[in-house]
Amino acid sequence: MGVQGEERTIGVYLHIPFCLRKCPYCDFKSIAKPGLTHAEEGAYADALIKELSSVIEREGLSKRPLETIYFGGGTPALLSPPVVKRLVGSVRDAFAVHGKPIEVTIEANPDAVSLERLKGFYEAGVTRISIGVQSLDDRILGTLGRTHTAERAVKAFKEARAAGFENIGLDLIFGVPGQSVEDWEKSVAGLLALDPEHISLYGLTLEEGTGFFKQYKDTKRLPTEDDVAEMYEHAVRALKDAGYRHYGISNWARPGMEAVHNSRYWRSDDYIGCGVAAHSFLSFPEWGRRWWNTPSLEEYIEGVSAKGSAIKGDETLARNESMLESMVLGLRMLERGIKGGCFRARFGLFPKEAFPASEALISEGLVASSGEDLVLTHKGAVLSDSVFLRML
Image (cartoon, rainbow, N blue to C red; front, side, top):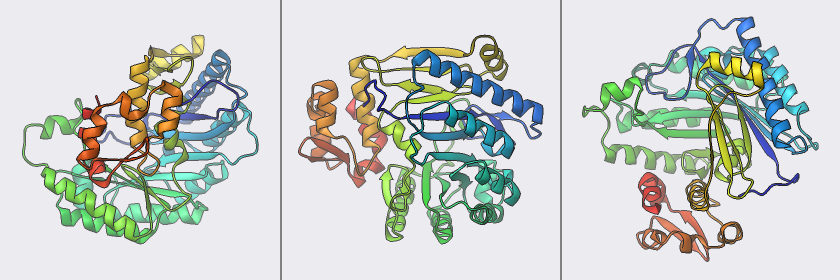
């Protein structure tokens, strides 16, 4: 819960919308571009750099210490290493970096990388790579519309290690049509055998406008709610036994290897989002504000070229909206949760005063209370969506 001041750090998110192919379950802004040219990636990088410079000047952020850079997508690993190096250098140079190591993450799909490309990213200043494995079962990968095999996913991980990466994250999806609990357990075991530093496990959601929404919204082919809960609970047990810290609802890490950039979102820390459809958030003045860019690649490049921005919309948060966001985002941090003293310093109320429903959630074992602090229980994490709705 931030206040304006030079002591506050900043994070930068760069949205790279290009993909080899659009996955049928994905609702992120992405553009199928299997043959990204040097001219195209160069033009997009020019726009990212110009937009960032414009935001920094407009908001007076140049003296902020930079904490994180995150290349998200899309498939950012489709960018060539020289372009990634240029972007990392430009972002670093735009802020007052005070010697503290900066976390630089790039998302990658197994079939978009090679050992040579991964070495290039490492040499470009990327410190962390997040690989979208999604499953270690070729049948499930086919259902998800992925363009890689389980064998290729394992090889990509090993190539990332060989390239020098000591901080690798792997993602899986559960609750996929046709997926059994046993299928899921095998993928989790296969992932643990690789021993990555970070693991993210996401339950499949049918987002309106995606191919999956049209295909499965009126059918019974999805796993049952009980099976999905069993998948999640199995993963919780297996990862705990393997020594991972369950620090976010969907996130596990070796001690000290938690994703710094994602944690910024949950703490309501400031970040700048550059690129097509990217969102930004600043916690000042008052209760904070956010803005987001056009989802059109053409409009984005034209807007940034002409005026340094391509903002599609913005909002200034009211006190109640800011309280709710702080509660929901804070509860996603399973170890830290909501610190009652910090919440009261920001909003003038303790969390339980601001959200009377929390008392019932505590009595039902969904939320735990330590003094004025609140955290989700294991049971609450499994049912987190309903817990957040009840907080309303």
